[in-house]
Image 1 (cartoon, rainbow, N blue to C red):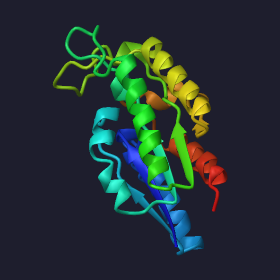
Image 2: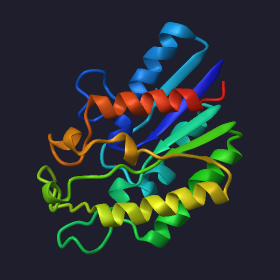
Image 3: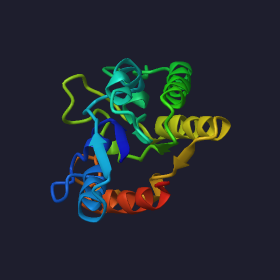
Amino acid sequence: MAVICVFGDSFAVGASDHKKGGWADQLKIHFLKTNDEVVVYNLGIHGNITNDLVARFGEIKTRNPDIIIFQIGINDSSCRNNGKNPRTTLEQFEKNIIKLISLSKKAKTKQIIFLGISRVIDSMVQPYLYSPNKTHFSNLRIETYDSLLQKLCKKNKVQYLETASLLSQSELKYDGLHPGPKYHKRVYEKVKHLLSL
């Protein structure tokens, strides 16, 4: 039995993919149809930041995962109210990513994958319409956090999957933040081919 845990935010949950529930659900369905010896747990939660993942890592540990796939970071880079102070500073983000890698390795996980951070439509998310906290997202900040994530993955010898190029701006027309089914289908295909099973 091989166990895959998906850990992250609304992108991992599959927000805005009203057809197939996101890339993680597509991965789960794929293995239900082709190999019932592979189990996929989607532990994504809307709005999570890296602090949240560190705090609830026990949810993963109890499942003894062979593979952990993280999709996190866009909310860390976001700012509330004035649009100037990120929810997670770059320094804390770095510490949290290193901690998540360390915890994953201690759990004897065979493969660790971080998905890169997608982009937004700036004009639609400053502030984000559906946020009660007037949350602001910015491609400039996202690129900074994503670049750091990629660097940390390389330094710590874990896999990084770039996702920004998998997204068309037209797919963000719903809310400027969450991509639709086509993005999730592309991510699913990329992740499926990365897996070491």
